[in-house]
Image (cartoon, rainbow, N blue to C red; front, side):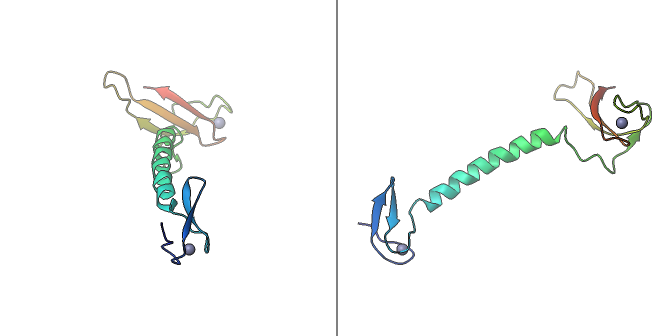
Length: 107
Ligand SMILES: [Zn+2]
Ligand SMILES: [Zn+2]
């Protein structure tokens, strides 16, 4: 027999977890929280991967030796990201200061 931690009433099994018949508290709360933490960590990793290409360009240095494919503007913010392999040149991510078009280039 199990009693509710919140109100002390008797718990009854329901859908694979113990549920308080008085206040509705369940014993699976902590398990659900732990599961949510795991999934949140996974989502954070995904965000980090995506943010490398979706970086905040405003305030970054601008390159003027480029031309926007979209509007032909000759100035774009850029960030440089070194790829995992040192043999490969770093990748430059551009964002047009005029229309916001994004593209990537290689040095
Ligand atoms: Zn209760
Ligand atoms: Zn543009």
